[in-house]
Amino acid sequence: MMRVSLLGLVAALASYSTASPVRATIAASQVDPQRNVELAAFFDVYDKAQLALSPTSKTVRGIVDEDYGRWDDFSDLGAQRGQLLDRTTLIALRARFDRTRLSSPDKLSYDIFESAAARSAAAFRYRRNAYVFDQMNGLHTRLPAFLINFHRVDDVAAAKAYIRRLAGLETALDQLMTEADARAAAGVQPPRWVYPYVIRDAQNVIGGAPFGTGPDSALFADLKKKVSALAVAESERRSAVSECQGQRLRLAARGGPDVRPGRRGDDRESGQGGAVRNPPAASRADTCHVRDALQRAVLVGRRGSG
View 1 (tube, rainbow, N blue to C red):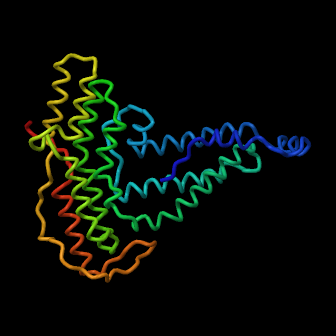
View 2: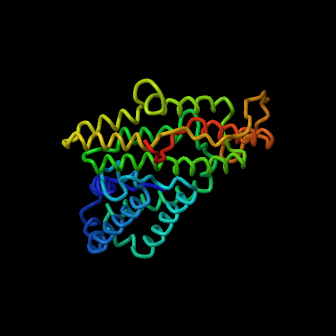
View 3: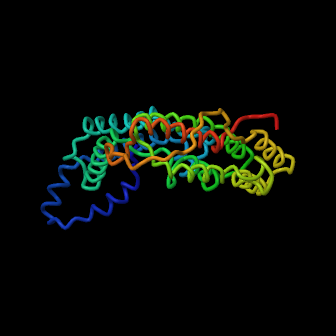
């Protein structure tokens, strides 16, 4: 789903024209000021609709509301909802606004949105050619980093929202696993040497307490640090930390086949959009391998007995 931001600033910079005064006067007479106001409101509605689909975007912007303890929908259906919003908004834009009656800054806003929507639509068909997990990217590490870097804890309610997001990691990672399986079934997956790095990165997230001995894990230490800074009674701080422990952050251990890496030649072939496609036999083995890797080494939140 594309993002449209700072359009007003860009448009303002573009409004300084080198056109002659006569031509500028003629152009100004064709502008409908009311339509410019309506266009700004139109883009504001679109922005709010985007935010409604993305609780994490709200958090990044500093918005704290009823979605503060939630994650985005990381399934392919979630991606389709975002694309549908872009498409329907573009249709409405063209139907409601005559570009020739807009001011120069608003024409630029119109054109930027139209261009971005066209690029987004063209790229959408290739969305499943990217890897879900690899050594450089993946929400198995980005989601914990998001909590540490963006989820502010200004009160006890925000601390509880943090804990709800810990619990929600299970659903988020299940969505990502489903998508990884779908792409692997189509032959789109990273080479086998990537998987040990994915395992290592995921295990780094769950190293230490409350998973085992040693220093606190990164997420547990982050929550404790944020809660300790609250100007509340000590009992409330202890309660929040205890609830975090009660989530029983654990390893998913749902089992799986033996997927020890075997020798594989360089018999891969290039897939659509530049993605690597593996032969079917190797593909299913690697599907099991990535599932086993994440089942052994992903962070999930589940309410336990403490």
